[in-house]
Image (cartoon, rainbow, N blue to C red; front, top):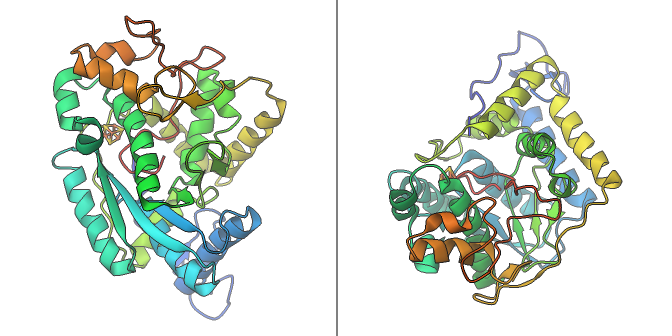
Length: 356
Ligand code: SF4
């Protein structure tokens, strides 16, 4: 995933258009207003607070895990949620939850950042690892399968690992650092692939309410550039290196396309999200019914969950068995990538930031 440019655009020697007292220090990417740092912090945090309140993302007394990768999104989310929780008395118990995929030279370094965040923000940290949960690290998986479908394995395993970690922490909800750019990109990808079923729910601010742990996205309307700017001005401690196994092909082009649109019209990101929300109303595509995996007990619309199918392939030395349009393993098991409309599933964000 490409990172937004860190350097904020310098505003000219003009007054802040919000407070009219201090000099403007930046041009806000979302609105192009010239504002001072203090007003930027205030509007950035207030917008997130409004999203939380208006969408009733949390209830007093809830235990909330923040999916933490050490990247900019989850680091800013942990910082801002802690601040808002104190300032507005949300009454939440916050935790950091990280997944160790076992990627040497990438995740081991980013986890060090999360460990520092644990101390900096005073939030207890839980780390769950692929090695412990599945018996495989991503380094070992890539050694076996190469760099073609690695993110399919990683995305499926991570989704389940987070749910398992959340269950260990006994939290009520998982908050992820998905930002507005991520959501716009997913809308676009689902349109390009004709995945109407996924399109209809990828803009939801809360998902998985019928699953083990609901997930919410407090940054649904927050621009990536503003997150980077906020982290930069606040000097937050985050990790910005990309995963060494990142493929970056189709999704990367969609991301660049959205960045081009944003350059011409900053509102384009919000417009794409709104379009995705409108599509939700008109869809009649049926989602598969949820049951539980016969093997591990995780939610699944098929006999075995996707993680168990992939794991079976790995353990049998036939890793392609669970990939893509494969209808199933030799014993007739069918993986649950296939949706009701027969189109391959697109993860909302298949990259190592844990913001998925
Ligand atoms: Fe996993 Fe993301 Fe790396 Fe792919 S790019 S292997 S999904 S961490």
